[in-house]
Image (tube, rainbow, N blue to C red; front, side, top):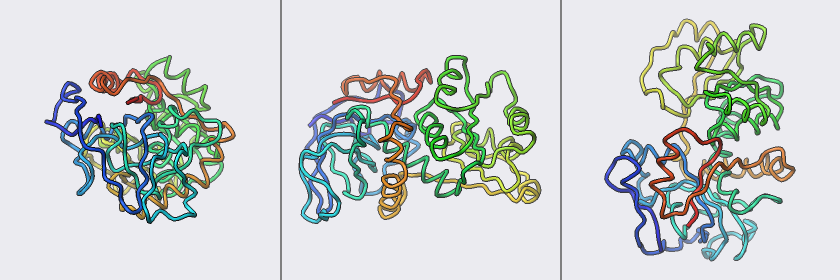
Length: 327
């Protein structure tokens, strides 16, 4: 089969398609003929040599796919509700940039009603990331205010919709009028981080209350200012390090606000945790997708052979929503 393997670290040009054996079927595995694979920031970090594949996982890039079930392992339980021919999505440790992938049955969900199979590839990783961080780790409650940094990326576009659907007020930072318009259409109130101080704007928009939750992909560069933007009893959830790994934090301010800083990654979690997250997504998020309150936002698709061009486009930051690869 054709696939994109981990190679020498570098820019998009290091990514090429090669022929490799199809993955072996595991006892609890689901073989999926891939319709599309989502590109994520983690793939870029892996390409740069900064985010190694978990031990024992495939060296093929890709953390999420949509496709059709081709084969089930002998230990896939009947109550998994999976059958050959079903249209599904899967959360992966790796392996998605390929024509076929084998995923643990517990990390596979049916494509929600009314969602196009190709576009569905943009759902599993972002839904699992947002729900596990905002609603599981940070325990978001209806009526709270969430500040989302990077509101028009794959994570951001999903987070805006999910938080709105589940009863939160959403503020988000954006970097252009076009991106502001897209975020507002999804239901967010926008802050132009190039022209406005996001801490001051959060305070203005909330009458001094601040953000109950901050979902941050920037990291060190925003650490102190995120704490300033938090409300009393607020939770800062760091899920990305685009602005660096090491920052300085005023612990006195953290204590005075009775705030919490939470840092998580999804890929390195044990299989049991991923299974619980995907089960929660199926229970709490999939109904919102099926009724149209949450939808995959797909910006562009590229053929698998154009993986280098796809990563170059992703790196440019021009996209609004997901970028997909189609084998």
